[in-house]
Image 1 (cartoon, rainbow, N blue to C red):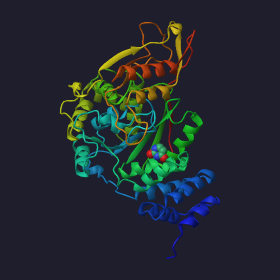
Image 2 (tube, rainbow, N blue to C red):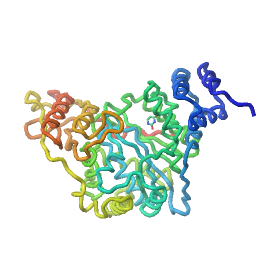
Image 3 (cartoon, protein in one colour):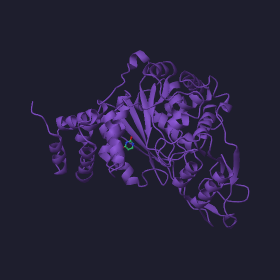
Image 4 (cartoon, helix red, strand yellow):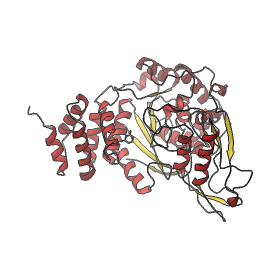
Length: 445
Ligand code: URA
């Protein structure tokens, strides 16, 4: 067979022609074998930015990237339930995974969750798990598989042999201003989810000033791409667009978010934005995978899983199976807390006024200021620091109600974070209709 030359593939894309499956496969194989250079990845990605990538090309790229490394295969019949997961585009206080996965496990599903680290102002599930003493985020495949089988879910970090073509392409896109291409984003996210062997997926697409996407139209366009391509690639995919114009959880910071998730699993919190989004995702996930026939049935099952403590039991078992404490849920003191815990209040001039807007990204960056996130890849982080009890939009500022309670390592860190938090809120004399619904839209392929 005639060899397809890599520069010809790039040229074809550059000139606006659609690539065949064979050409895409050839390019991705070249990326994995390192025959394709970083410069060629950059040129290809930039050509995609200018010429776009059709849905067929996106599907071919997704499948080729999935097959560039190890692909987990699960037998849903042997397991006794469907293999499913969600993926979030990230935000501040997005600690859904720690509640959702045990709920789905309690409802009869199996969740092999391959998660990532924090990026910029957003937290990462793997960093949060590392707040749990002993938890192994890089287990062997056998241990991961056993935890999923026995506990209904397990969460681990992405290893180098999962979609390695994506790893190279993403790293090059990151430094060549080519991340923002829906086709490339779609293939990057879905190839990893397909490599985890999922039967179905729900995307949680965050929209608002704490998310990577602030515009609803853009979020819809990406959702359409993910739902269509995921479904075409054999993994039925749906999306919920959810609000990120204020933090999702009442906390932000690695250990603090795990503690909040645990409070939901213990049944101590059954309202609020985090609870609502988690429940909506659980219902969608469960309906899509056939665990529930109607939303009402799903809602009841989710309530039961939490109220009966079954979701909590799955959580404890999975944490222990991955090397964490056996009794984390009943003994949250395993998670370390920071030495300085102090409230930060609005400026006196704003007392009596209402919180009309908050720059959520700045709140995430306050956690980074505290040492709870990274300013460069590979940096160590402090799992104990962060903030709790965010002031919600529409609430009134005064001398008793803080904007947040900061958990800091030092007084200087506290002062820096406090200044950033104060600067992030805008207050008005009258209350404004600011907080819209937290679940905005449901989209399918
Ligand atoms: N997250 C990913 O995993 N890939 C992208 O391309 C963008 C966000």
